[in-house]
Image 1 (cartoon, rainbow, N blue to C red):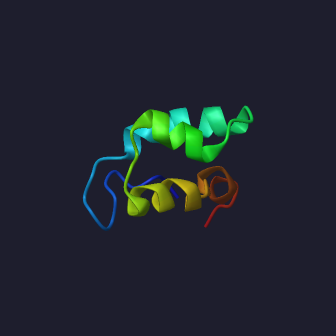
Image 2 (tube, rainbow, N blue to C red; image 1 turned 135 degrees about the vertical axis):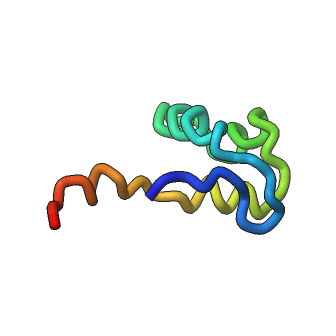
Image 3 (cartoon, rainbow, N blue to C red; image 1 turned 45 degrees about the vertical axis):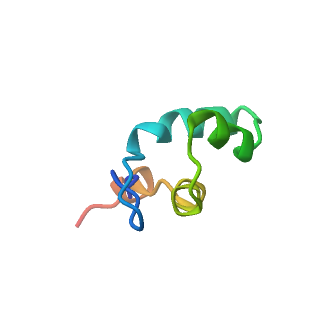
Length: 64
């Protein structure tokens, strides 16, 4: 749904990096380069950013 505030494995705060990562990768930059420049070094944080899917807008269309 929303990006986790902290990495589930190491506990590093990563939520503030999501918008920059999403914008730059959508513009065509390579994810490895973007994460290196944002300072994301550990594999668990990289996996969290790369595997996140925005489901909020899709779910918001449905009512109870």
